[in-house]
Amino acid sequence: MATVPETKSKVRAYKMFIGGEWRDAKAGEVVDSINPATEEIIATFPHAKDADVDAAVEAGKQGFQEWRRFSWVKRAKIMRELAARMTEKSEHFAKLDVMDCGSPIAGMRGDAQSAPSEVIYFAGIASELKGTTYESPDNVVCATYREPFGVVGRIIPFNHPYRFSAKISPAIAAGNAVILKPAESTSLSALEFAELTEGLFPPGVINVVTGLGATTGAAIVRHPDVPRVAFTGGVATGKAIMREGAENLKRVSLELGGKNPMIVFPDVDVAKAAVGCVKGMNLARSMGQSCQSNSRVFVHEAIYDKFLEELVKRVEALKVGDPMAEDTDMGALAYEGHYKRVMTFIESGKDQGAKLLTGGRRPMKFNKGFFVEPTVFADVKMDMRIACEEIFGPVVSVFKWNDWDEMMGRANSVKFGLTANIWTNDISLANRTAKAVQAGLVWINGQGGRVPGSPFGGYKESGMGKEGDLSDLLSYTQEKCLQTNLW
Image 1 (spheres, rainbow, N blue to C red):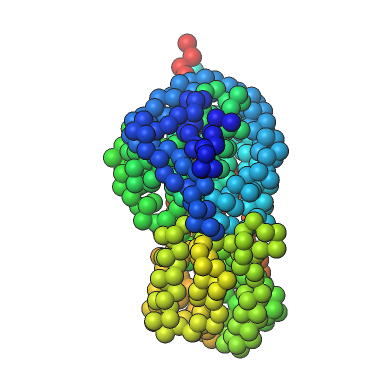
Image 2 (spheres, helix red, strand yellow):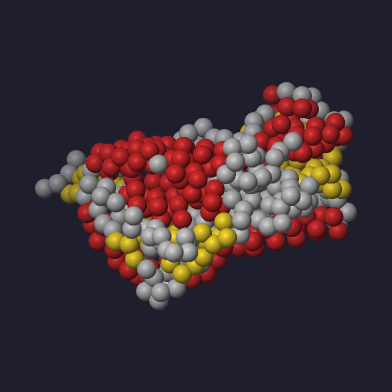
């Protein structure tokens, strides 16, 4: 297996996939991949620099010239074969992500099983790359066409490594070549995903380069021959990509952070709402490392104490343990720097006067590994850091409210606007609140999950552009208007 030769030390040395070949970085530098649960080095992978990205772009250009000539039918057939290969290897990728990113096997198995569906979906709508004809004089034919950009960049985050590798699907369905850049802390599954594409796509259509965001990612973003870049990750990096991309007027789409409100009205079944809160926090799938997590919970004062009791009971029932064990609910955070950041937020919550009800530390049974107990703060105020900054970890902040207008003001006061979760049995109140909340995706009495083909994207600093729907596919094309004069 070209990507993972085993060394005497049991540490596997991966290579990058560029132009259908497995390559080391030209400078020879590598990055360590560390198992977050054990803090042991499990692999190394290349640290790509400008010269490596240049090579990937040149390979992409060559692959694009062949791929763009394929009919959508042929592209879709190849993509469905890729999905079949992904399905066959789903258990392998689930275990690989457990070792590389620390999430529990149950969650990563779900990721691995759902990843092929994104490939299949975009293969299925590739025929929708249609133009429009316009009424014109008898001697004129006017129509539009959609054409791929060429070589596009796709930069993905650390929380769902294999699942997000499938985010290249709309780009390749539209006829582009892709440079995929995984997160520097979780790069292994993207490299092994590239292995599944061998022999299916023309060389250069799919390239995977690895390394640090500040070097490898930046090289992709500033490359003049990469006109389209899509990024999923943090707000600060998203803003940097926009600034860098502006130099060449790149088309940029950003799926960024969230500080998402869950709004609980007094007419609900409190126990069900508490269960929904835990599920909506994505604690058991990714330890709250999710941009969709409902980390701010606004509970009406009439049920506030009862809700906290039910919430704490269910949070404390979650088992934090070996992420490879089938009975583990929560594993480890993805890497040391993120662990330290989450712990800093927890300390700030305590220092600023929030009431810590449970969690807030590394479980006593672990003396290593980036584990954090699921944490619940009550009596949170909007001037606290935990109330307004994205933590991206297993930390829930609960607020008490009694006035709808005042509560909505607090719910909308942060710079994010990705998702919202509303719990009430009053359909009129639910829709009134859904219209008032500033978020791109709103659930009513739900706990996450999206209907396939529906758009995902946020308001304000939660990003720009939509993913997972037809507009995502179209965003990887340019519209050309062609006017033919008939003689």
